[in-house]
Image (spheres, rainbow, N blue to C red):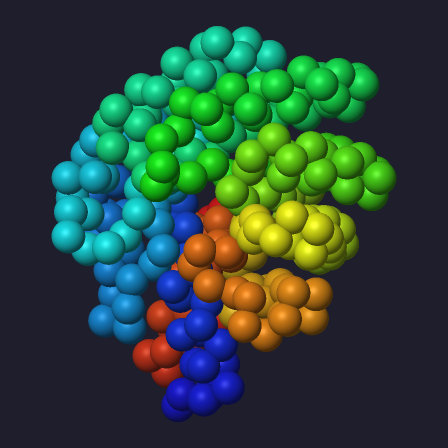
Length: 259
């Protein structure tokens, strides 16, 4: 039996999903399967998020679907070789990537090298032509301190991020409501001061409709009920899609496995 309230939430969430496979053992066959999952009878996800080596394949397989292709750079460690990260970004763009998810050099940032972190984001942003977009991963579970999360959010936004993203999904603590509230507040402040929308992407550990809905409730509270759309909000997840489809099909699957 279909729970209409849960189904309604699931429909809203489905089009906001960045369907992710960043497994170390990911294969071309896995990418084919991911691209097929991205288009469902209930609608399509917003994007797939994959390793750079699979971008060209995903672009080909998703042609005409409307599903964006996102990839990761400086992932997952958030290193300090900015020239290498820029080259990685340029290669992904040449292969057809629509969206770049950059891990900011968060360890350098935590050591006080805030200007370096900002400069890396600026240089990567400069390598991304419009309409492709940049999402900056803060790795909030490693930053831990609310003041650091706030400062990292501000730096990323001012350096040109189109989205700020919580996590890689590769550390013990990933997306949390507490980090989301800080990041969304910075986004709201930036929108008020600069009249420019920056998006938000929680990632890692979001596996149920209730998990996802809690983030939407928070975004609605801070930024208003009409703010959330695929151009301003994404969920980074692999298992969430199964939970959404279970709710929409009435099979009642509560949580999907995976990231």
